[in-house]
Image 1 (cartoon, rainbow, N blue to C red):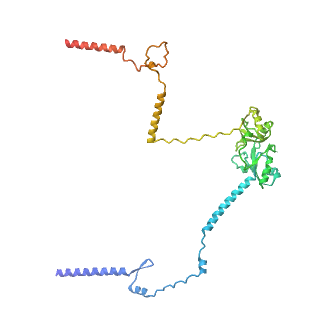
Image 2 (spheres, rainbow, N blue to C red):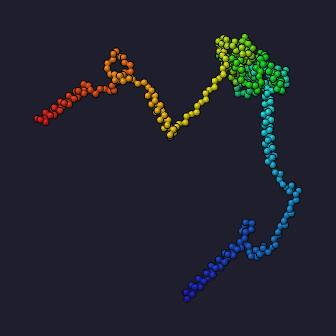
Image 3 (tube, rainbow, N blue to C red):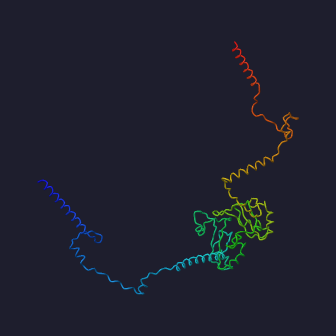
Length: 381
């Protein structure tokens, strides 16, 4: 019958489902991971794999002391690092000391002729000791685009009577450099040299110096030497020049050997040199500028209200102190004894705006009265 057939088919389907579930479980069990890759193996192969003996590695013998010393890496200690830092600092300090010692035995030579060479300068100063080096500086170049060193080597510079340059002369000892200071003021290639220590003070004695203004741009140091020679021994002359062109800026400073020469030099004020009246004055110390006050911080809150009260009280006090006119002067409204003259303490009262009373106001009142009378007459009639 039909019911039996349906029952048989349902049983078959249930068996088939159980078999399928068992196959799936078996397939999952058969999958093993070897070096990260899935591979399906059979039960026999698994048995062969697990039946093989596993070779256990023997423990390595402990290393000896010699092997440890050979294999141990060399570790840098902090003491060595600190030593390197201290060594670098010591080198920097030594370099600073060397440069300071070198500067002490170096001379500055000014007002040199542009025709001077390093050999001729070394020969002049070599009489007082061993000259290690000569460096030329402040050369007025013809071509501003060219480097100064190249212009000095190629001698491409202004070779006029007014153009000058300076140099640094390095001696082998400090005593030799101090002995060479005696060359200050000596004439070399037609110019009086200005020799001073490179480490010396840049501030000259103002009591022995004068300021010279209104100089011609073509003026030279030699002309000033001759101009002030009648006042006394001139120790140094410095014309302030443009660095690039070497042309003077119109003023100079003259240093004398004695303070008495300054008084004589001031008498030359107004005398002409190269067609211009010179302005000779003494050098005064610059007054120190007063310290700038700190900017006021705007007050806020209670401080602002206190400031306003204080300001109002001060204004009221000033108003009370102001002189007032007497009572008779305040009540004065009569005519003046003399036209255009007010009595002492009197004030003239000025009327503000046009007067309300006048011919126009009277005409309006009369016109209103006429209208009222006409209205009354009409009402009575």
